[in-house]
Length: 247
Ligand code: PXP
Image 1 (cartoon, rainbow, N blue to C red):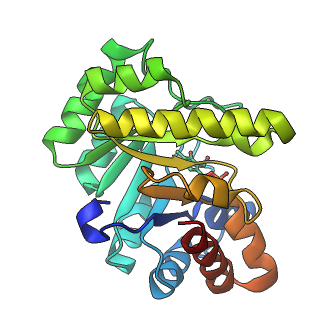
Image 2: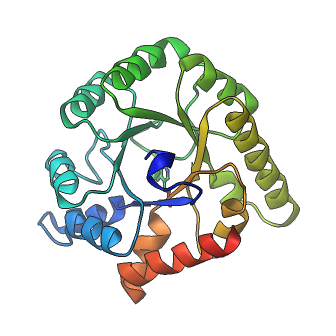
């Protein structure tokens, strides 16, 4: 998602993976992540995020084109830095590709990508995606050495992992918040657009949304969970209101 699309506004990318998780629990077609994408578009979401995992536990291959066709919203395609995923991204040409670490046994993307330790593995992936016009984002921990690695890799975007912040309490949360704010500022000073996401909820989103350099938040599990009770329209709208109020 390009800041030109929504100048000055903190964008909300809705991760619809867990609509697919519920669908996959029964192996059929319902609930359809494509319909979720259409609802997100109808209520003013700024983008759709989806992760094609190696084990396909979230969206499936055929969902990618269906989601792209369902709305005009930009797709932020989360992917591991593997040859298989690069080929798939090049076939579908999503607006953005967010490179995430992936371990089969993890429940979710538990940590950031080690961009600093994996320069040689990531460089050709970033180059191939960028050459195809896909905006590359690296999902990293809010650490200076990871930002420096993103600069060396030429990534235009970093997504700062907010999981530690979301799980921390009290003073520890304030420390994590400052880390994210400092790293968003460092990224922006170096011409990298900072995004953030993971574990964000109605209760913890506002302190993150108030960080002025952040251009986009990607939020999934909580919004889909809330949607069970209030509907996806209402959960996305409420998150949007909280983000707007924090700016
Ligand atoms: N951003 C990235 C890169 C992710 O991998 C995820 C999902 O793990 C999210 C954002 C959304 O996190 P959550 O589902 O906890 O809101």
